[in-house]
Image (cartoon, rainbow, N blue to C red; front, side):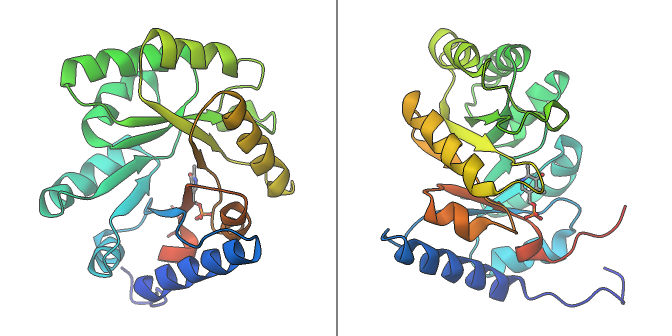
Amino acid sequence: MSPSEPSIDVAANLTGVKSAMADARKQAGLDASRPTVVAVAKKHGLARIRAGLAAGHRCFGENRVEEAAEKWPALKGEYPELELHMVGQLQSRKAEDAVALFDVIQSLDRPKLARRLAKAMAERGRRPRLFIQVDTGDEPQKGGVSLDDLPALLALARDELALPVDGLMVLPPAGDDPALHFALLAKLARRHGLAKLSMGMSGDYAVAAAMGADYVRIGEAVFGPRPAE
Ligand SMILES: *Cc1c(COP(=O)(O)O)cnc(C)c1O
């Protein structure tokens, strides 16, 4: 951490995020218990991660396999109940490392990756839960399966390969009203009999919580601004 970096109170941020979500859910007539915060620690060092752990938080996210492999194996030894989520685009050749490292992989978006994950799970005897990332905003560069290709990917991953597909994930286009994308994701999950929704980030987690998110993926609102590269 550089001396000029502003001090960030990770514990207070986590409390604030959770109470904002509870308020939003109460206003929507829902119970306050969900969603789970995936604290996205990408680009942050161990000091801020440890502050989250000290506050009792146990669910974290990363967006790069290499970075996660440097930061998390030792922490997972210390905190066996820790749950680590992969939220970034995943190259097929890194499927095996991802299966070894993560407890949940949120970015399944194509048949080749589904097949690689199935092979890696069989070899490793480890079955991270999966979310299919859906490209509801027609932005293929961000990853995510198109709406047209979702049914076939689901048939392959869940039915043919018997992968543990728990739900759907979305990353709405900047500038769009996220609520439209969250509503579409919820509709797709219902249509396909999937239980869980991963939606909402620092700017829109309260909206996502009120719309039934099971996981929100929150970086800056928990850990502060990411260091520049
Ligand atoms: C970085 C990242 C997040 C968290 O973003 P913030 O705006 O910092 O909350 C969520 N989801 C994905 C896929 C990410 O890469």
